[in-house]
Length: 327
Image (cartoon, rainbow, N blue to C red; front, side, top):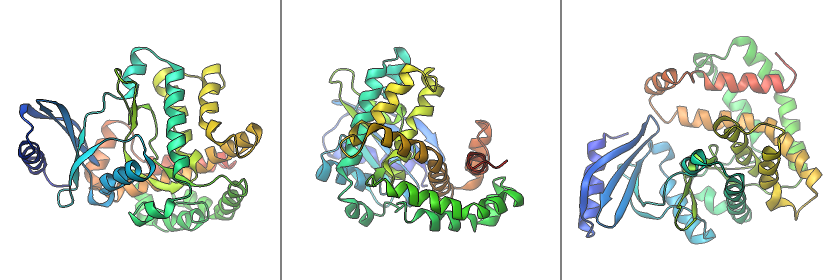
């Protein structure tokens, strides 16, 4: 990515040229190997500039299409730069996680889940428009091929900690993975847009208007809708003290399923959800790999090492092997 001086100059120039008075120096509020976010304080409120690697830089186009064609609740993009791989957004409030950390409200989190799922369903008959923007096609009929392709990246996976024995086990599981994809497809749940990191920290919540906006679309793909939906459940365990199997967990899971109750029974949806829980591990591997190859690996590895999150692909593959009864 280009250095922050370039994008700060671009953002400042745009805002000033369009009549906004900059009241305070710009502030970097997030700086990760795959994303930089800078806040500009102006006379009419805050604006946020986001820069990403070129490989996932179609986010503003995705956001605009979601807003224009599907009336989705997403940030308002006011400008973008293809050259700098960045865009400016209007402030849409703090993250929902901040609100829930102050006082956990399961109903509010359920509301976010159902709204996100409704957004997903709105795209199910229009995925071609999203694919034309470069959103990856990770539909179930493509996943077996993608699974084999990523296993062919032997040196890359070994560098991440996957052993030769694990690679062979994963190759042996390829027919089983294909069969699992076919089984999940047989339930007939239409595939939609989804983001691997769907959770309450990627939902902006305006405490005054109570409006929610969904962010982080640069890593979006077309895939089974339950893959990304499920992600919010372990996040609720980690950040809000929810326990799998308790009443709150059940409410959140019901919220994940509610938008599809018109297609089949709840029991059948639970079958789909449980199967997708296993297959989404590979969906997460694909997302992780896509992100890793889009950034400087040394910088990324240093960042993950500080957070004790190294070898993410290896750990995910081990989880999948274990879910299939292996060790």
